Image 1 (tube, rainbow, N blue to C red):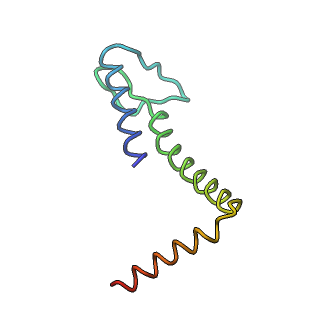
Image 2 (cartoon, rainbow, N blue to C red):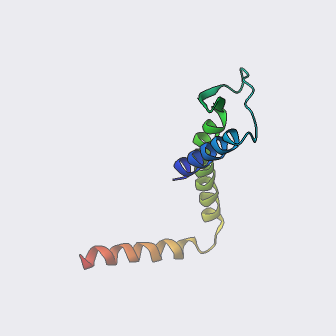
Length: 93
């Protein structure tokens, strides 16, 4: 979801700013344009950031959750409660 939302939002901002002459893309080797819109280039790297950043965020969130679960003294209680809920759902079906 972050991939789609971030990519569309970045593209909309860039299209609106280039359409209203809010900024102009100056082509460089480190910031190539993907396509032209009303004569201005729409850059590639801001789009790539929105492909990479949510993946990095998700991995870091998983690592943080894992480290917090290892440090919480209530971990066995949380796991037991979750497993009991899971088993009760299986029995109800």
